[in-house]
Image 1 (spheres, rainbow, N blue to C red):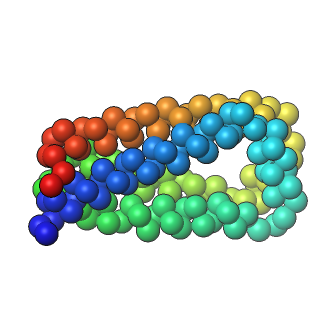
Image 2: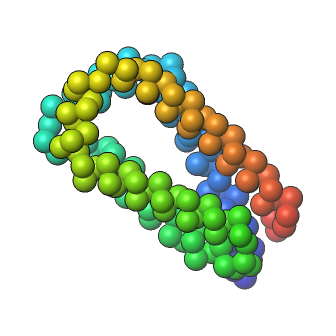
Image 3: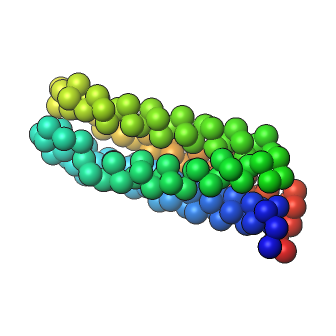
Length: 145
């Protein structure tokens, strides 16, 4: 198998699975915002950031790195920009975990946490739609073989 076919398959699967995960988790945050708020408030009681957030960022980072390399086989600006954008999201998420001491104080004192969670869920669903469009673009650009 050459890198071009593997790259097309990788990005098709990566975009599709990521879109489904974003739909599911974004929908959950929209529909169950009170439970998410309760989880965040309980997590804010601890001095260490939640293990769940650390694992999500770790595995996202591990799946982004091959995409960054594969965006050069064949070279594709779209995949390269997506990989760099994804790394930026992981970096910003990591910064928030490093600043957990300040963030937990904000979570404890926030009165609009439910609205922020709902808005975050809507953004996740919108990004999920964009990823499905990217998967469609990859498939139509070079069909799977």
